[in-house]
Amino acid sequence: MVRAGVVGTHLPTSGLDIFGDLRKMNKRQLYYQVLNFAMIVSSALMIWKGLIVLTGSESPIVVVLSGSMEPAFHRGDLLFLTNFREDPIRAGEIVVFKVEGRDIPIVHRVIKVHEKDNGDIKFLTKGDNNEVDDRGLYKEGQNWLEKKDVVGRARGFLPYVGMVTIIMNDYPKFKYALLAIMGAYVLLKRES
Amino acid sequence: MIYSLICLHLENIFDWNVKQLFLYLSAEYSTKNNALNQVVLWDKIVLRGDNPKLLLKDMKTKYFFFDDGNGLKGNRNVTLTLSWNVVPNAGILPLVTGSGHVSVPFPDTYEIMKSY
Image (tube, rainbow over all chains, first blue to last red; front, side, top):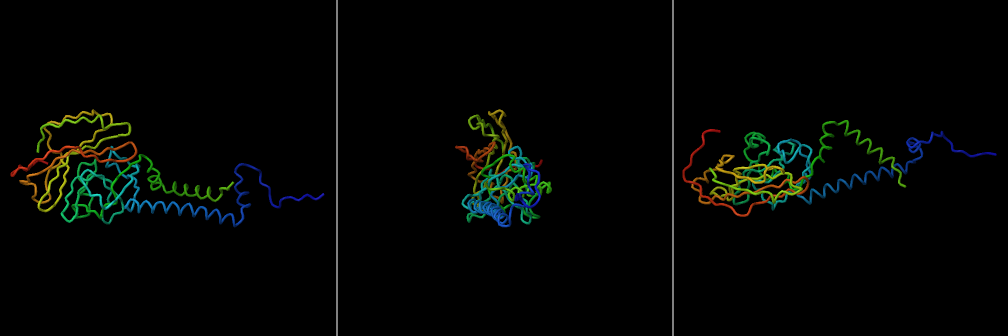
């Protein structure tokens, strides 16, 4: 009696039969998984762009990077911003701004505002936890900030959540490991 | 500028989701150069658990009060308002302005504080 058997090696069955899985998957299934993954990434990007449009801010979610606003915000906290043009800049507001020529957003409080009849505003900021105002942080010769420097106004806040971003920046190996795990999971996930 | 007496009762603002209050006294006025000016004169952080009753007597302004230009000297109408920023444990960050304010005229002559 001839018995038909599966051609190829039998790996010992275990929960982690990864290589068996990879071999059984043909090209079509691989492309399908890759497309699934691309769809997830596109959706995430679309949600982010949608937030940018909704809030009017180029960066509607920022992570607090320094302790200059303690004890209100600590390094690693997450801030939600809006940047509506109709909202005037007023003393006491927490603004996120970028100094011209620098990439890093700074989260501080407005302590002085001078607004002209035509709507031109210049304002000064200071971190709650700092002794002095931010003039030392501005560009050489710059004494005031203007509306164009503002990334947004802080409207909401979540503690600790932003730490993941900081860890990924400080320890790039962690970022690659995370991406590798995510990639492996998506490619090998079997749709039941 | 010296204040005589400010008494604050903050218990009603603190609830389970309030981590701290950032209080500030701001002066608002208008000048020839600028239609609107706002300057923070004094601020204080009150954490949950701190004494919610504040008695501020004879306080000097924490920050120098000067204008961008010469608009303060002799300005008849400088409005002082107390406001506060509620910082929650998580959630929305409201900025509340106290109801009621004090209008003071700025004197025609004033002393420039030499010490820094």
